[in-house]
Length: 82
Image (cartoon, rainbow, N blue to C red; front, side, top):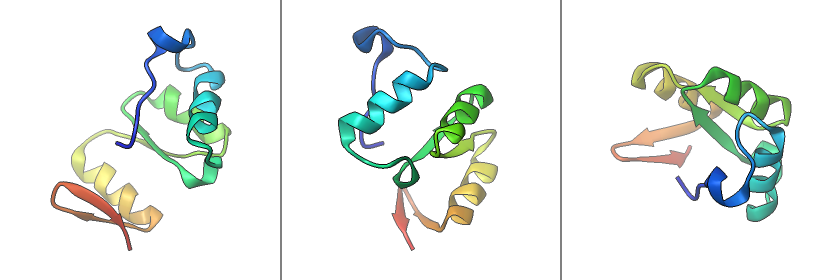
C-alpha cells in the first residue's frame, strides 16, 4: 500500500466515484496505472468503471492469481513488477 485516503478527512465516501478521482489526483497518476484491491465488490466495480484495474478480494489464493494475471509477481511480503 503506497497511501490511503480516509473518508472522514476528505468528506467523500466509497462507493462515490469522487473519492477514487481524488486519489488519482493526489498521486497524479492515470487510472490504468493503479491496481485497487477491496473485499467489497461494489467498490471494485466503481473503480473499474473509472478505468482502474480492480480486484475483488475473496481469499489469498484468488487475489494472488488475479495479481499475477495482471502481470505482477508476488514475493514473500511484497508485490513487484515482472
